[in-house]
Amino acid sequence: MISYKKTSSIIIFCPPRKVTGGPEALHQLSDKLYELNYENVFMHYVPQKSNAKAKNYDAYKTREIKAFEDRPENILIIPESMTHLIRKYPQSQKIIWWLSVDFYKILMDYRIRKQSFFTKLFYQQKDREYYFEPLPNVFQWAQSFRSGVYLREHGIPETRIDYVCDYINPLFLDSRQPVSKDLNNKTILYNPKKGKKEIAALILASPELEWIPIQNMNALQIKELMAKSLLYVDFGENPGRDKMLRESVSQDCCIISGKNGSSAYYEDLMIPEDYKFDFRKERIPEIISKIKSVLEDYPQHIPHFKVYKEMVLEEEALFEKKLREIFKIN
Image (cartoon, rainbow, N blue to C red; front, top):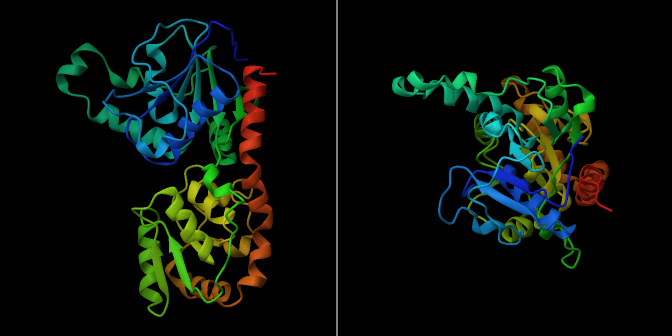
């Protein structure tokens, strides 16, 4: 159990200047803890850089700390991409937040590979990495059901895992700007950074369809685009609960997805199985047919996404409830 005292500091580790789902979740955590009247909450950017907090996160309340003491009452929130820092702070309580399980081994292997000959004379990086050892003051947060499966597969008992999922930008939940669909809008939205080969194959196979990449946009622009659109397509790896999938359903977009990562689990992507596809070349005509069906008969399809939307709309309240539980906030 995490032990929080009035003298405790909660220090959230985060990469600098990154604008992706993981760093946003870490900034949301800081903001929510301040909202719950915690005062000693700090962002610790690794590596340290000037202007480390991305402008996109100005809406989230944070304070930066560059150095701190390793003390038993302190609580360090460390994303899975930085687990190599766990042994640097043996006294502090540490929570690993598994926001993107795939990055853990990728980055761990990268750090070991890039180690220079001279560095190896002083220490072996592989000996400083985290291999799921049962350390008494290390706790686990799973951002997704899939993260929990991954942790259990690596020997972490269920009693050491808390399920703490972030939430979409509150801008997407602003009911003052109601969603208004144009049923004549037959464009298809996608994230060009994800599932590149699969999306390229689908675009090539459907020259009669109009595909719009979501890129170089702020949150308001993305929301406005999604609010007008009928369909979002995603065949990315999805190592955690993907933000854009959740944002799209909040704006009443239908979804067609792959079955990679968290998308394979109904607990993470609560849409019917017939909107999820194991991507193979021979299935492209079937996927295109489903896309066209959604675009031509949107009112018949959108009710199938009600359960997922309701889950997304509840995420912020569940996030707050879980923090109150963990840190014993009344």
